[in-house]
Image (cartoon, rainbow, N blue to C red):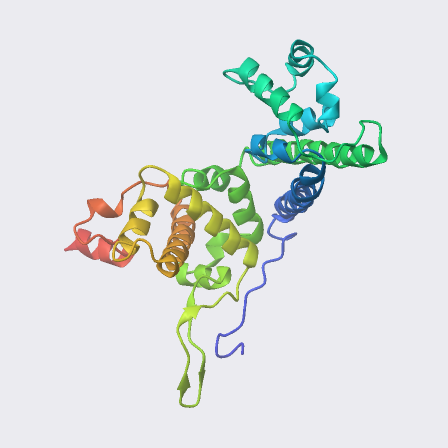
Length: 311
């Protein structure tokens, strides 16, 4: 295998100095997983039983105020025991910054009056367990925020970390994940090798005369695939960038075809990985619509540029 060149080069985290980045990324990942499990427990068990109407007020997993509000008013009985004015006064500082806070609290109060949840009292064991789950959710949100701040402080002198964030769809955590899972991205001599490492390359199963369907290999680093996929979904939702343009061109033939949309997301994720490799390898920030400025619509290779300059 060594003679034929089909071996993998091992990149040691301690030797190449990215073990600390890996630990930050993995800790954030585990805390996020636990937070999602606790959040699902809230949304699929406790709220449907005791306060089902409150689910319509949950819009963001990063809104800690919602958990703080439920921690103080977990069931309708804890709301209706106050008058409307008293409830608005007590909950005013809990619900965060809202444009029409009085109207929102009034609607929440009226919703509690007409709730169809189980009529449990506030000091019951069921409500105590609900509050334990809510407190864990709040604590996990705080821990995740602390890890984000710690990662930002640790990576403040890392140029690749900020260079990756110039790409549409890639934020601090995605950039941290890419650097943690890749290590030294410059060790890949070509972007196709990096795509293969991510599992975003195409492969075809063959055996004798049998030739299978060409499809995504998915044999690389799964966390890198997830990171680029999520970054692609964010970039596609933005108003104007090359990733959104590629997605629209891909589904132009049949914009309602779900299978075509899935393939388009995969193509954009692969392009995201290629761009991430290029900006780090070349040491340049992302340039939007760079391909459009080239007559052929494709980024020329380094040899082609050198040949053009010397001709």
